[in-house]
View (cartoon, rainbow, N blue to C red):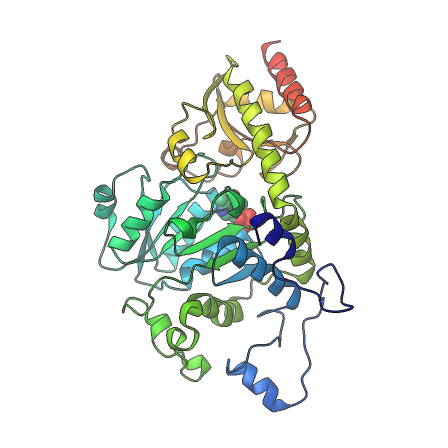
Length: 423
Ligand SMILES: *Cc1c(COP(=O)(O)O)cnc(C)c1O
């Protein structure tokens, strides 16, 4: 099946007389004929549903679809993107370990890495993702266990040189975890460039309609977890009678452990209702993303002609710092998000945003409805001046997320807000 077809058909194949649409199995529990049947599930000898915290048929179908869309061996859906990133790291790192992350990342991820993980004894070093592999290697420590970055950085809008990061991770023999939220698997499948684990906030384009929060971890299935660095996976887990994940689950060791251990113990489970909504969104991903891209490209061209605008970043525009990388990694299109500065600064940016009529002010991106946000006073307001600069956020920065309306209506609204700014 081609990508667009998988968006509709992967993960759920109804049999004779069954519902055409993926059903919502709104049940926490499942019933079995014998204690022996249930015992086998608990010992991981057989797979099956026994409690929705661990697995649910509706969520399971979406997980299978997402695994296929990214080209992975398995997936685990979570109740938010934050939970997905948290689990993706915690699945393989523990107190005393260290990892390396690009500094151009989502504000929530930055807080998680810089503060919460640090309190848990897991240390991060932020690096400039534009640096060479030689430069990046200076951040490596004996206890470094992972490398992390975003395909298209939110909100800095830099495209990652994925192959460079994959080569770096390979050279130091640690897994490369990538947040593919902004690109979506429609425009970029990081496993094809050497990434090991993909995470998403499914709250964004995969859903697209702003109706559920969710996340997913997808396992590429290629990393060798038995290299001695990851005893969590290659040595016995006493909570499952000494099972060794790499021996029992092979290529799916990482994602199986994330489910049966982390989801069991921490429980950031998506509701079946939300998985149903997420699935509806994914069904139209391909057509929506094409339109987001067309509108954003037009809006970016329009904005770049405005004298009130500076430092516009849209990697689809020629001359953008990430244009070449975009041509390589996301050649068929990009997300709808554009970042730019209102040249006159923070107050003027607020004034321009307040003048918008159809475009709504939202702490969100990737909605089918066009929306805008001022990161310095919202998503990134906890960051110090220095951290803001490191993350590429300036006081006048605006993040515009182009929806799928008719482009004329979007441009008309942006124009009248500029008129208001001058008046
Ligand atoms: C929104 C976002 C997250 C966090 O996801 P939530 O669903 O809001 O928890 C992580 N990474 C990126 C790139 C995001 O845009």
